[in-house]
Image (cartoon, rainbow, N blue to C red; front, side, top):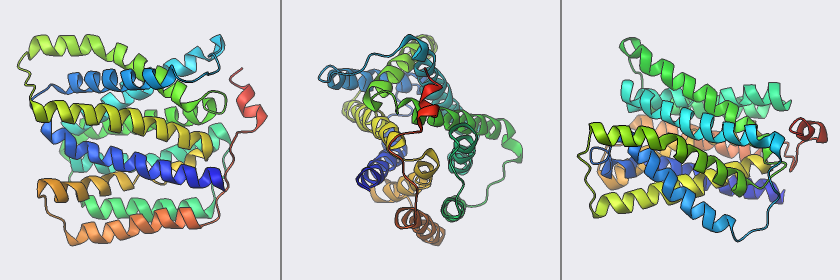
Length: 303
């Protein structure tokens, strides 16, 4: 029960941080190219995490597990998150948010087939409530002319969901801070050449006070803190259960947009928010199986 409560707190902080990213990025987009923003956020996060990591004695990553750590950094933090940004650019934020709301379903499916997690009635009800809430908030969109953006966003969802399941397994063997740090560093290295190319094509970069503060927040809170807590939550609770908190992200983004950017909130937002919060509360208060560690057989597959 103690692990379960910790995981819930970590997940609430994580999705508040990820939701706030959309608002904070308003102060950076247009002043710094997109790929360079990703590179800087990983550099900032990596520096913070390395400082924290040096203060802890951790188990050394075994050679046969290198491929999983690399997959998390390359496929997850570099390719999947990059595809998410590209999908948003090729379509629009509302449509991308709607596609990203598929994360709970896809993570549950991967968790069932890879981790052998059970698909319970509780998870199904929570998922339906939350995803319906996201659809109501985002509203209907015409995606016929934005097929490429939709396809890239769907690819991002499937890849990130797969990586989340891998994180769930490997954090049973290694510390979540350790895995996050190595993954972020790998992502920074992979992003660097693309950032250099981007800056040669678009050298007009503006650094002012708002940009610097925003990048520190994006790198420190939205990346370092959020990803460590997401990975820690996956180590404490089933991947399918963790995924049920995903619909909080667009709700937080729209609420903070109203609070800080003066964006409007519609009746749809209120109704959708009620469904999302209801789904999350049902997940928290309902009967949920929580296992602090996977079964020995699952961990041995990494050995």
